[in-house]
Length: 101
Image (cartoon, rainbow, N blue to C red; front, top):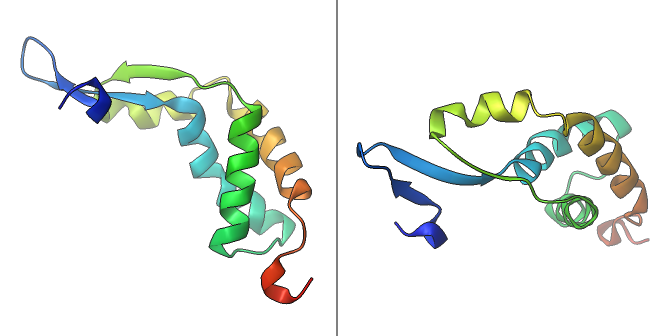
């Protein structure tokens, strides 16, 4: 694949991927925030929270082996900032329209 396909091969033939670490952290943490605050879990509300959060955070792209993504996400200094922004984003989402509000 090309760079726009997010995957390429290096000279040795090993696959490399381009990953937005900020987005990975947001996607992995959003369910925990929603659960801890007892917010609506519908896809619409969840996507609103994700969109608001990602618009407030800077993207952090890295090129790495797919096997190292988990480690990079877990060890990222962005984790605390993302948690805070997700909480604020969840609070910014109005009560779900699905429930008649």
